[in-house]
Length: 502
Image (cartoon, rainbow, N blue to C red; front, top):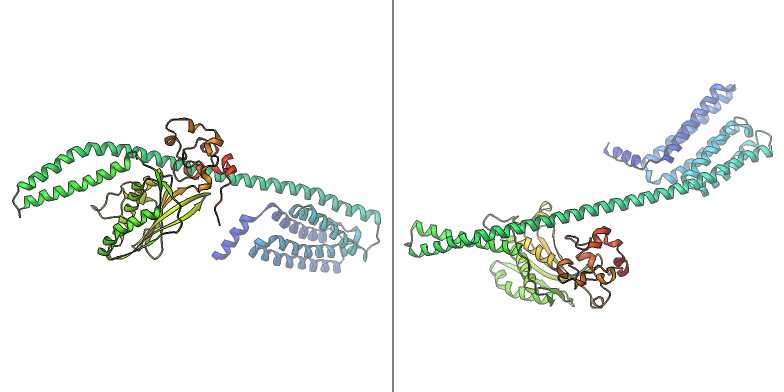
């Protein structure tokens, strides 16, 4: 039953005006045949002949529409097959109702008009030629041939086929244009929704950052006093008493709160980057040296896979190391019972932009799909209360966005997760070519704080669509991109013609 319902929905969604025309034509043909039998003075043997013709008509129609129902995707071929039966049907009607003088000749007109409308004027003219031949073959054995009357009748077949076919071609072209415009409009609306979502997310995080910075500063001073007094008190209390244990708990909790505040301030404050060209393989080697003992203690297997010939990126070493450390710590915490930690570098190319990618993979329990988006939210954590601040991944995301890149996570069905840091870079041959502000003349290169106004300035002017435009994963900073709505329609994008190697 579900299969039949699915077939019905498929047929209904693809049903067109021409399909209705073919169906109505068959009802008209059947009704005309029955009406002729009822009205015209027809001999009994002719009635039985026409009933057999009607039975033939109903049989092949039932077969054809059954075929259409189950193979509606091949309906054009099915209609061509039904045309042969339709021509046979009209041929029989003409033969048994007077030959050249038969009123059923109108069936040829209907067939020509419908096929010209459905397939175009070429097919319409072809059907007109076939109908002319069939009409001639049907009339010659039955009645006298009248050349003038015959030519007058068949000429209307071609007069019907040509204009209807041309009109059909115009309508089909207009329909395709409208569908194309609708697709473009739908894509533009979806792009606009994505941009609005990005803008709201950025504004929300900005407001949250300002609020948390103010709250953190207000809390830090009294918290420092509490911790200091608790440490003094602990020094004067006798050992092995409940009071010194209380003091020790206070000191531990104050230290934990200070870590939370430190992460909060790191997340909320403006970064002060010291950008320079750096090799991510070198950074990975330093991380490997630092992790060797830790992994051995935790019964973890550490595997480092460095891509050869990796290009240098413009980064702040300390910030990228902080992001990498956060990801490594999360991976280690996810494998409490041992496992494999994999650090790898590679290159990638998306939207015409080249990236150096650092992958951190673990064999832990993995991440459920419904948590993939939430794990980057500030203060959201899957760890037990008291372990972590819920800001580690948010800080990683912030660092990557300030490096004009992104962070992504992918989970495998068998468990484990891979976090990837995407850092954009420009091939050497692109550095000295025309930059976007030079072509678009937006004036960003003439202001003092250009780097704050446009993330593409001064290092990413050849991939502005991915770092400041509509193809970026953050807020759209480029004014021109905001007006156009899609960087792929931008003049500069067309000039650069970005592509990724296969």
